[in-house]
Length: 363
Image (cartoon, rainbow, N blue to C red; front, side, top):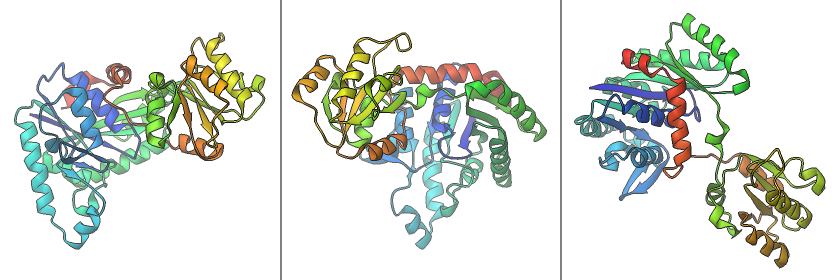
């Protein structure tokens, strides 16, 4: 039975995305594939258990039938670390992880193990990613993102931590490389990794669609109510503009899948957005994603009815435009089981840019 441990050099490198893409592609080679995230930090309550949200996602997408608690035996809830430091019980944590892993691996030809952050995360309670990888006897794939110098520096640092724990590194996958710099970065990174004696398993370009939230996600994460257009809540938001200029200037920036953020009393901007939605120009060829009103101001009822008739998603925030836009910028978009188009895109991108055949040889 083969075991692969997926770790990242930092947050938001795309570890869960790549783990999912690998599972979907490796299913063709390993019909009995399993998954476990031994330690999770962001959890949901499912079936009465605290379970890491990434484990829930992969369980639902891949239709695993094992109990959720076995997919994520340790959920680091508030106060967990403090309690451990005051009363350390490393053997108890190890036992919980091993018990769950044995259940997952019992009927698996391959188990994908997702870590939680970089190699050192978890050290505070005696179970760093490096130590867990060694404990489970898994080979490691490191995920890093973008650039040239920083990723290689961080990869070398993380590899040293895994090697210290006697955990073998299969290689690395570089994620989220800007398309316009892809050829240059790929060439230099491959050379840099080769000189460090590190296997390059794939270099994946950045795709903005994967980080684009839907109107529904924005509504849920920021707790913004709908004033209309809820039937189009699945619209993707690829661009955000602030409607603080003259309407004819705003029209220059309203393109495909744009969310227009504007005070509720800027009816001129709202009407311009409606016009752009109804008569897309040659740049757009599609409707806008939605309108977000700020300041808690509801437009005139006639404007409101017009928006509802054209079925544009309309959200309202009680906060000012600057605060609202700042929160939008800081929004962390998580993949959901219902995001079928994104999931297919992830599978296709991993198939195209990751050396699956080479990975199978290393395993």
